[in-house]
Length: 377
Image (cartoon, rainbow, N blue to C red; front, side, top):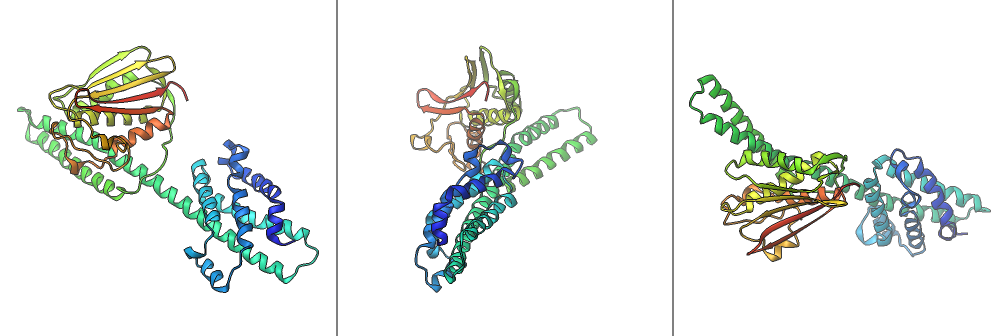
């Protein structure tokens, strides 16, 4: 039996061995079910068998060895790339992911050889073609995995850099207020000046970091749930936001039970970005209103500001990274100082908690962001 025929006939048995090996790749495998462990193994094997049955010239073989696009197998590449992405998502490291292909190669050859009466020249040709397909699949999986690692790293750096701006602004504003006091001696003034200079340098470094990761963002946020009060978190977020803009204090309205199991740090990110966005883009002559409403299974967070509405054409992309919009009425928005990460971070935090977020924006009613957070996972 030719190797491609053997793979098709025994594909389920081969995938069973793949699954048994994947179970040993801990700790990620401990939390995976059978379907997740088997992943794209069957698709990869069947695509490999189809590729082995197609005619191939020496030039095509040489091109495939070099990874040239015209000699690749689309269905094999797609399955392998999806496998690499998903293995990264569930927590496999790169060595574990690549070891699956090593085991798959050895398993197929071992099972096939056990079924052979005596090897023929065609058998060696089959092994060459099979190794080519596994190498191609491994290369695609590795590339997809590496891309996910890069995107996740860059998303972390982008969020870190973006969220450092709020406390830096608060420090800078506080030093400005301290320097206006009349009873400060020269030594105290020098300390304040050092703080101010250090803050300016840190802001420059954060700006450089955000420039570096401007177009390289990535995947879901990890959350550590603990019991917390969303209303209390809102009060803290408003206090911190007002350190940067002391002339504008949002109004907080609380209704019902506002406790739930969420990640306190991530919720803090969400609140800082939503409230900061409302202060930045809202009309300075109108107040920002933050409402927290406890319902049976969810807690709603509503942030409202008046002013220039979001353009209808922008509503669909407002949560995308690197999307920026200006508000000419607020007098607070500097397009060059914003990378458009705030609402992207908000959406990521909401998704990580299994919630939802919507936005409405009209000339008469202003702009309202509504976040619905389930009390428990």
